[in-house]
Structure formats: C-alpha cells, structure tokens
Length: 613
Image 1 (tube, helix red, strand yellow):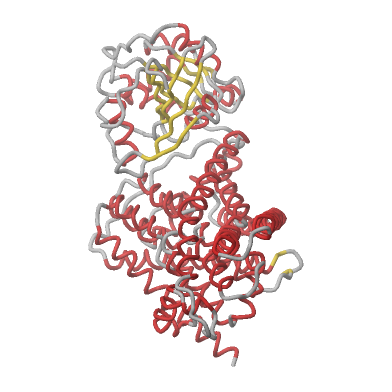
Image 2 (cartoon, rainbow, N blue to C red):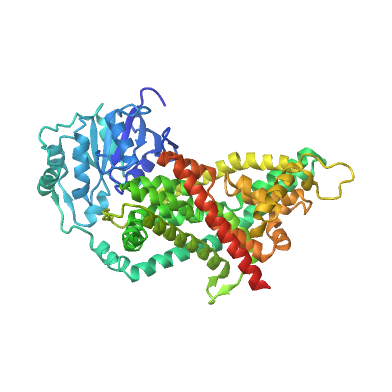
C-alpha cells in the first residue's frame, strides 16, 4: 500500500454486518493473518474510491464495549486508542451499527465518540429497517451526534456508495463533539431514540413467529438435531461426485508425470511420495468445504446464537453455558478457530473448560480418516429407505464426540472448587438470508488454508515419510518388503508393542506420528507406507480396498475410536498454550485425550473381537 493511503478501521458490535461491509468494500483484495503473540484474527483489505482515493481498510473484531472483557475487545480497544504495538491509530473510524437494533448498538457508538477521532456512523441493514417500518431521522441523528451518518446495505452491490461518497467529499470528517453527552450512556441512547427513531415494534413479526418454533424447548431441539443430521449426510452424499473427479484427475496427472520417467529415486518420490500422499488428502477438500458451508450458513442466518440459547440449560448441567456452543460448533471445522472463539466467553472458568473439551469435537481433519475407514468397512446401503448407512455412522462418530465433551465438562465441573452459577446474556440478531458473496469469500479462505496445509506441512511431511520409508535400502538378498528395513519400518516395529493391545499394526503406528502435525497426513502416510510395501502403483486411489484386505474389522473400529478422542495436532496444542499461557493446561489436555483415546480403542477392539468370535 502507498504511504498516503487513508487507514480506515471498521468497528461495531458483533452481528452488525461489519464483516459483510468489509467484504463488499474490499472483495478479493484482502488478506487474513493473526496478530503476533495472539490468536485474534487480523483482516486487512485495499480499496480505491470512485474519486481515486486509496484506502486501507481494517476489519476489527466485534466489541460491545471498550471496557474489554475478552481478547477480541482488547485488540479493538487498543487499536482505536492508538496503543497497539503493531497498528498505528486509524485515520478514520467507521462505526457500523445495525439499523434494526439501534437500542443496543448506539451505546457503543457513543463510547467510540469519546475517543474524539475522526469518525463516520454507518447504519447498516437500512433496507431491513425500512421493511420493518423503522423510520430514522438521518439529519436529526447526524445533528445530535455531530458526525456524518450514512445508510449502508452490505449485501447489495451498491450498498456502500454513500459511505464512499462521504469519505471522498472531505479530507476527514470533523472530530465529534462529545461535550453534550454525560456519563450515563444508556440515558443518552434513550434520548436519541426518542428524538430520531420511530420503531413500530421492538422485533420483527417474522422473527417472533420463527422464534416461537425454533426456540421451543421440544420442537427447537428436534429442529437442531435434524439440521445437524442433514449436515453430516450432505458431507457424504453431496461430496462424492466431486471427490471422484479429484481422484481421477490426481491419478491421471500422476500417471502422466511418472510413466515417462525411468525407474529410480525421482520416480519413486513422485509416485510413492507425492501422489500416493497428497492425492489421498486433496480428495477430501469437497467434504471439508461442504461442512464449512453449512456452518457459515447457520452463522450468517442468525440461527447459531439461538441454538446457543436453546442448549444453554443442557450445557449448564455439564458445567458450560450456551455461549460455549458456537466455539464448539466451530471446532467441527477445526479446533483452532473453535478455541480462538472462546474469547467471547467472559468467565475465565467457563472459557478454560470450553478450551479443554473443544478438541473432542470432530474436526474436519478427521474426515479423511473417517471417510477412508467407513468407505472400506461399512457397506453403502440405505437405512429406512432414505438415509445412507455410511452417513449414519459418520453422524454417530460426531455424536460420540459431542457426548464425550459434555461428559468431560461434567467431570471438570465436579472437580473444580468454584461452582457458582453464571447467567447467559447474549444478543439474538434478526434472521437474514446469507449472502452468496460472503459465503464464497469465506469458503475461498478456508479452501486456501487447506491447500496451503497440503502444499506446506503435508507436502513436507509426505516427502519426509517417503525418505524414511525408502532409506536405507535393503541389502542384496533381503527377503522382506523394502520398507521393513527402512527407518520408518524400524520406528513402526519399535512402537507396535505399545499399540498392539488396541489392534494397531506397525503401518498404523507409522501413520500416527506425522498425524500429530496434521491429522490429514495419517491418510497420506498410509498411502505412502503401503505403496512402499509393494502393494501397487495406483494405491492412492485404492487405499480403501487395500486396508480392507489387510486389516480386520476390529482394527478399523479401534482406529475410528482412537480418532474420536486422539490427542490433537501440535498446532492445536500450541493454540491452547497461547490462549491459556499455561504449559500445565497443554499437558493436561494432551494427557487426558491420549488416555481416552487408548481406553476407547482398547474397549472397542476387544469388544469387536469378542462379538466376532
């Protein structure tokens, strides 16, 4: 960016449509990173206004107040105050408020005005406010606040035109005059609403009608269960054609690149290392994106906070609050953003409990392992004529993770000394139709993160595993498979006595080690191990049938049980360390997860052997 670019910070309460406005302004010209030493996400984008003005847009985390009660609010407060070590103070603050819920959002607007920095107020979702019959006296509100006020509609193509025109019209808006406000911000909000806003009803009729069903203690829980069940069915059913296409494409590319090469180290690296490994992971991208798609739709529609409210009573019995639902649901995609999302939990005790149980949610990185084993050992037939049996098994694995998380949280509740109760206070936003542009941008970000993992960590580990599986080469006259003589074979045989009681062979032992860095690598590691064992060149596409021939059903079920509870990847443990600033918590998390995984696998393996005998 040019040094002359105007630095604009978007601030506002959660659920005000701030990120949707950021996406509208910046489109694909944005980058996402984390602040150094913190897991708070940093979003920055670029924009050239119609008048040719260069803007640098920063999407700050949502905040209810500068009296920071969470790491998110600390970051937003420090940047707005100009006290953050990485970010200079913004040249202009655009405070985004939900036009349908000014009673809540105006209080934060007044708090931002106390900074006496150049600012604009963007009344977002102004179209929804008009549909509900809410009339806002824009000139009157602007006059009383002493700052420019514009209407925006973040989901419309031209929804930020007036905002950009206002920025272009003057060098910077005048500093707000805060002398007219006293210390009682709530009283000032009531006065502003009385003078400038006519609201026929406090909530939309359609919201009330939907909430009567969605928040019903019986019907609401049934709807939530059905939504989760359909989500997991879609992960298996919708993704299959795309997975088949990727599978065929990777196999074709591998054949084209390797068949022309002479036998040797390079051909082995490409065929047995890269394509047997990476190809086995890329094929699961459609399933991961479908899972993210459902989570994003539930979040953008306004349903997730209601699900949290609905589950509060059940989660409270387990020592959690409904506010933990959103971090735990996010952990279905990946435990890392799920643990990061616990920053919204203000009570330190509840936040720590949520962090400890978040790894038990079945993250998307487990999907490659689940899919591989389910497809190999569970027949593809219908249940009750409408459900896919493989999808039912996948739902059962996810449900087991949820049930175990609640059980662990209950145990933590029994062990801790402080058992005081904490009420759930949260905003229920208006329902809205998710916008395709925002969904597409978010899915693109997730796809790029996955592909970077494939091209970075997974690629490096796959090549390393190929090296360990290839060297040293066996001497002349060696009768076994070459991999038995290699470093990897020796490591696997060394570990096998520890895992033999739960049915794991030395091949699985090898796959578990790189799986600590990224779970998806377990599949690529198995592909590399069996390819190097001499089981066929096209193994990346046939891994399922290969393990079906080599493993017993008891071993497959044991490995599924292991991955329900298995210790998280190193990245997750590192995030736990950064979020809690405690190595003790990391060791507790890794220790209890390993114990659960080993115990569940032991019981599953021997029960399956007993039933099969």
